[in-house]
Image 1 (tube, rainbow over the protein chains, first blue to last red):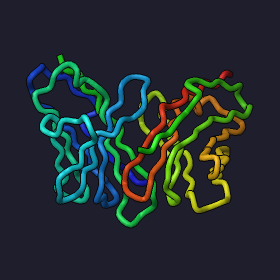
Image 2: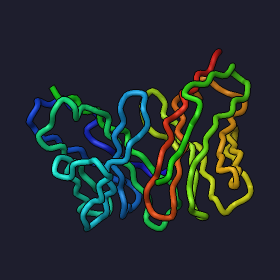
Image 3: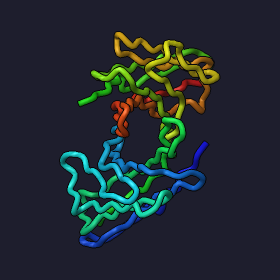
Image 4: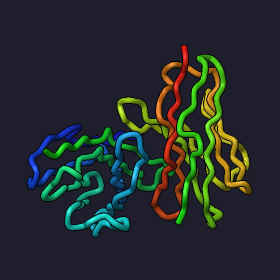
Length: 116
Length: 113
């Protein structure tokens, strides 16, 4: 199946700093990528839909100025958590749907963010 | 808004036995897709099986099969001959003809040796 690479797999940062998470589709093109947040033992909550070459669409309640999403190419989307605070600590997962492919959603391996 | 409900937070099954995980969803759409994803302790989401709403035939993938009841908006997953490696969180997901996927709250499956 298609591979989505997410990096880093875990990151620890100080409160107030910014953290960038990368999501790459390695063997397919993805016009749309999705960013999810998952708290322990809970479901995936969609944060935003990232469209190549245009602004991301954020779900209600997600601060667009805090969670900056850039989708500059068909294979790369980035999520930057700006001025991170301890409450931003969570597991973040990206996913991508192949252009012209099946309706399947392929997931990255996730990033565990811990803000001290 | 679309909702996906998994009413079983936890399930257990004896190794080699069969278990069924339940999922219901709410939608006014007629064209959509349904999925079951598995999330093992590694937290990597893995696609288990997919069903197109316009297909009446239930999808099967080796030991995994679904019971898709469109009128009842039900989409259960049956795991046959359960193996220890099947232990994981299982998420039911709905995707409409747009882009968004909606996930259920998950069912934690334990496989008892």
